[in-house]
Length: 425
Image 1 (cartoon, rainbow, N blue to C red):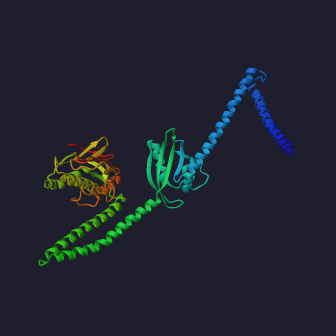
Image 2: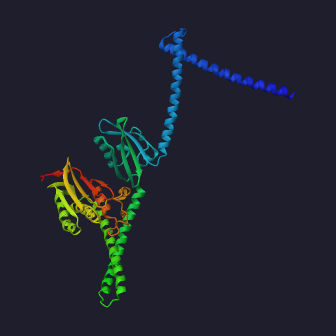
Image 3: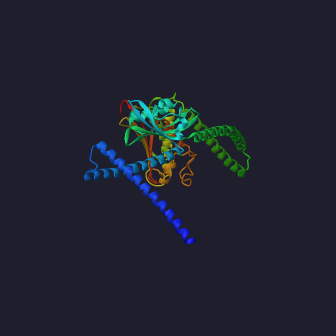
């Protein structure tokens, strides 16, 4: 009896399944028939013609394929937008219309932090972003047909710093991708670092001056024990070294402050600056047994801060002489060259010194970084010289190229853009 009941139930459910399959098939057939009839009406063809029926069948297959591709593309785009909306970086896609109207085509959720309205798609970027610097950066990209990058400060809706990159689109000359990275935290930490260094330097300067004064007074005592005198001289040397570090940090603070002030930027004669630095080091080079030579074109002019440019040239030539004098064998030469190349002014300082290992080149401009302490122990300094040089050159939009090989010398090439020349040697 049980087996008979189960057989009846199975037969019943099988019948239901077959009915469902049948009705679905009939619905699909009916849908296909309706599609055929509609296509026949639109195209004015005979449904009973075998060749026309075959074409309708192929059209139906193409239609289904298109529907599948559309659905696949819709899912892909939905996933892509979901990924872009979850990025911790702003992405804005813009296009330019009527020569100068920039409209927003897409923006992810991160970008909406800088927007003033919610309805942004298809609107002019002037309407939705309260920052002329960003708009100017995008326009600059269109004008120069190039990628652009700049750090910008936004005040709306709150004060934040962003690193903005405007990238050209390879598939569309009218399109640009704007990338925004929030660097507010890094900027705040940088400001704290500068404030700490300045405060610490000022606080240390006074006690160091007092210590130096007392040490000098004690060392003037002719009856001082020789052993004690030796130890006091070591303390005096280290105190003087610490004082130099404090002075360097104070100078660095003044430098960073002056680099934000454009009042000292004017047309300067870099030929005269280079000659002054050369004359200053000429006598010193003879004492170090280094041959210092110069090839300087006359009256080359650039836009810049004369005092800071002289400081940068001084630091590089000073380093070249120091590290060339450390060379034990071979020629000891330092060459200073200044010339015009196209519309630019190029300054080269080349030496035949001990060089820089390749692994150190990427860090050479970092603050407090010194190459291989064991090799440079006899050379004074705190690793601030080249950091200061890089800061000055960056402010002047000057490119710096460094080429060096251990035990085979170093070449610094600095390119000042848009230099002017009145006459040459």
